[in-house]
Amino acid sequence: MASSLRTRRGRARLRAVALIGIDGSGKTTQAHRLAQALTAAGLPATYHRNAGGRRWLGRIAQRLGRPDAERLVGRDGLLVVESVLRWLAIALALLSCLVTGRTAVMDRWSACQYASIRAHGGQRWERLARAGYRIFPAPRVTFLLTVDPAEAYRRIERRGTDHETMAWLTAADAAYRELPEYGGFVVVDGNGPPEEVARRIRAHLSEWLPDDPSAGPGPAPAGPAPAGPRRPAGGAGRDGPVPVQARP
Image (cartoon, rainbow, N blue to C red; front, side, top):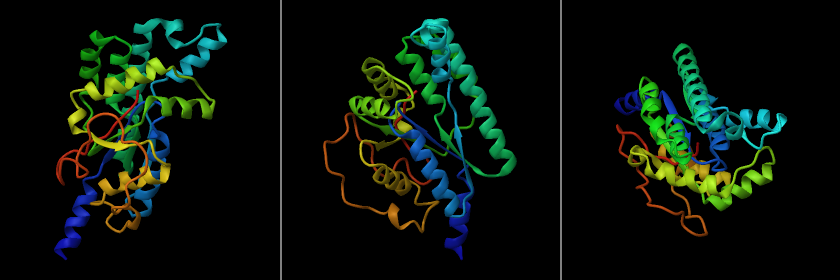
């Protein structure tokens, strides 16, 4: 009885989960999978794509004969548009989940905007962005999906819907690791197959997915270890935030 009560209380605390990382790290795929897994486990969840509009602006720029969004509105203009659009998307997502009572699975979060600002070299805008995003409650868990920039580049080219340069992906990867919030992310290696990455994410959420047989410890994936420091698999504990890797 006591164990059942603890489980229900633990589930009740899972209001929002965020997945962050560079483009091509698998955020969207894993956010959809996680929303489905939580819902199947009896914790109704909704996927929210908190995009900053850079891809949309890029398409407009190309139609107007400009190579990318930054050439259309300038670096500062791009950062302002990104910050505002992402803020609105997050606000609507949180409001929706407050009204419906569902868990919000966030594909991108404020940390993505801070990393984007740093990768663009617009650090003077970061303080203003943080002031605007400060009103949002932190997700219960933030997963940072780490992936080698070269692998991210290959994935982006394969999907064929947009394009990123290696220089941008490398700068964004470094920006995530330099964020002051980095120590609170649950860092997940995103280089492997989607099924393996999903299993690692679910393993960190065992408090809310106690009956998920695929979330238990499994064989270590083959291949090179991801760059950068590794975090303990257990994150910050039952009552603390869970760490992750992201992309603007």
